[in-house]
Image (cartoon, helix red, strand yellow):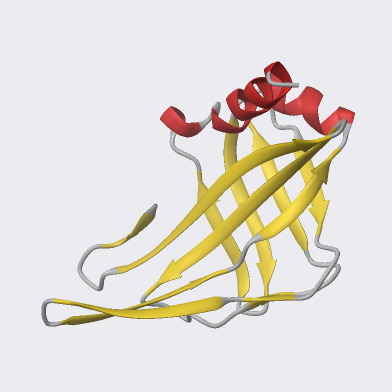
Amino acid sequence: MHGNYLTAQGEAVQCFVVRVHNTHILYMIPQTINEQSVFTIDKGQKAYLKFSDKSLITLTNDEYKISDTDVSIAGNFVNDKGSIMVSYILTDDDIKIINNADLTSLRFETSNGNFDCEIKSKFAELIRKQIALVDKAK
């Protein structure tokens, strides 16, 4: 999560990995808070995962997605949130990159332009650890 605490605007990305048979699927949920809450990720738009060794994984969205929106009240503030869940199949080459370097940033192409998210070092191994856990459970 990063943002502007004066305007209560922010962006975040949740990620998790599942394994179906021998296929790893990466789910990512980009979220906006008090920004443009309605956005789309169109079929063919890309997500980019950049790693500490300068390697890059490019993932392509295979279906049109529109954000879910939510409005809430916190004290005197009205908060609006938009989020989209997108899924990507990870190849064996993608897994090798993830296992050999730390994730440093994410970029999603959206209808509102690029959605960029720097990854804090304490979360850099999160996807790698999730892959190890789902592989251990097989």
